[in-house]
Length: 155
Image (tube, rainbow, N blue to C red; front, side, top):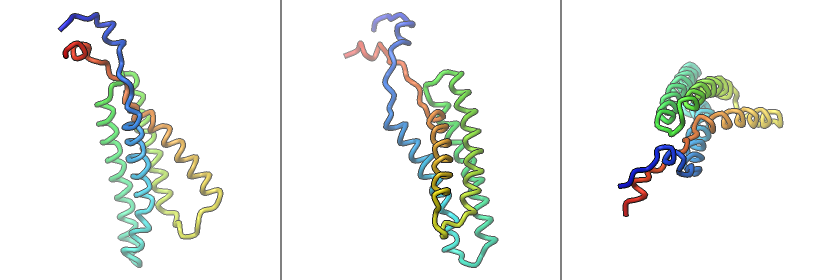
């Protein structure tokens, strides 16, 4: 083991794993909302004439999704390698994006997709998705981890 200057040690950073970062973004912020959006269609198929049961299930899904997103997001932020200022930004943006998505989930769950999508629908969904995914990319930013120089010195 050798002694290293702590200032020098902090300047050596490992590269960010962009594949993992993108994977988190696609699964939690791509597939999860899509599953929620299509849940009412699935429930409509399961319970064709039971509107109260379907509506109650949709409301419960939105509430459950809120807590799942907050829990997973806060766990990710607490385990990343960002500084305290960036973590505060990430937590604030997480809350804002989750509330934004709750509103969008609620809106999209009540819109039946059987009528087909117009050009306006596609533009609206593209803008909503861009805003949300852009914000969540910042929330899920993993930070850069300092390398352990003692580990590099050992054979």
